[in-house]
Length: 289
Image (cartoon, rainbow, N blue to C red; front, side):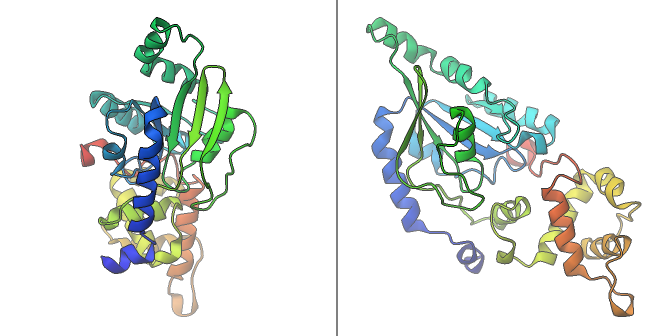
């Protein structure tokens, strides 16, 4: 497990610095908005965040909801609500759900707004800190809600630097998180799920093993999606043989009639990430509740 964590660059020192930065700014923050990947709601979170933010009001933004299983997203939202946290599905590319954010903040912070009113501070803006692990869409969310590209957004981890405030309107200001919150990788499943979605690079794991693990999950939860995409499959086969079968169906055969499993693995992962297999959520509430 130590080799696994090292290969995906788990930096305890960096996390310690990030925690300090967040705790220093928290006294002037009214709420925390956490962006997660709707396809992997658990693995795309930093488990230390709850301890870091304490009792601050907390909103979860389930990004990339258009790529996830809508029914399971609803289950996650109900689960969070049951545990006292408001969650809304969003998609930063299409803008879906983004307009709900401002009203959600006002609802979650209704007591704070009333306090402002009682103190004669009507018009004082609410301040919300936006957090999220690398590549989950944090800066893209800020860009979308701000209406112009003012937060740096790139498809690689760790591009946001320093404290960046964004005035959304007279009633709302957003703070882009100082530093980067990394997930923890004690559980290899977390790393695998992040690799499935492309949040961490493929080279950290054997591509064929990664594709085999994805096949195991899809065979169990979305067998009809696999057959719709690749034709009739024999789910009594193990994941390696299923990978070979899928590769053969796509003509990925090398000399001797063997399947080019590396090519088949890359194809499967790419088609999952591009939503060609379907709207898929890899983590279900009952597995983590």
